[in-house]
View 1 (cartoon, rainbow, N blue to C red):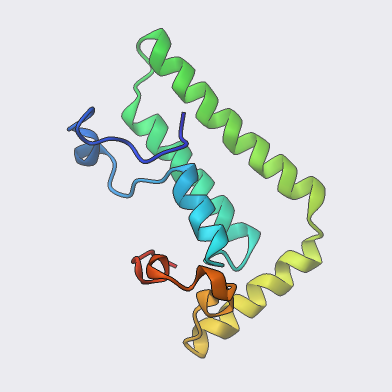
View 2: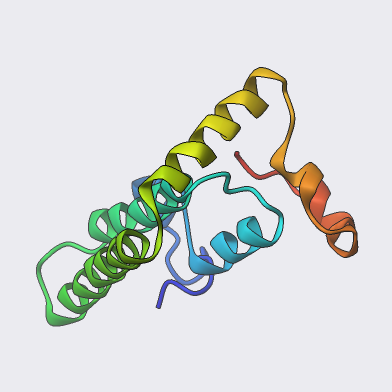
Length: 127
């Protein structure tokens, strides 16, 4: 659950409900490509994943309730781990660096390891 992009062939109405899909595979790719400059940016995608799951899966039947529960559990776990493991001063410094890079129009992907500089870097990601 949440590991791969939603298969539009299986759920053709998904994009009519969810405007900005998100999944863990996309998030891992963004990590590899240094698309996250701070924990906040990572947690924003976790929130997006959770919002999408809640929007698409109404609280009606047991299967939908399970998906909703797992999405909220994933969000809660991510926030708990970040809070427990990351120094808040470090996060503030990361956000400061991110703002500085944006002012200078420097992409975080520029700092990705050379072995990742293949066609994957030309894939359009927001961030």
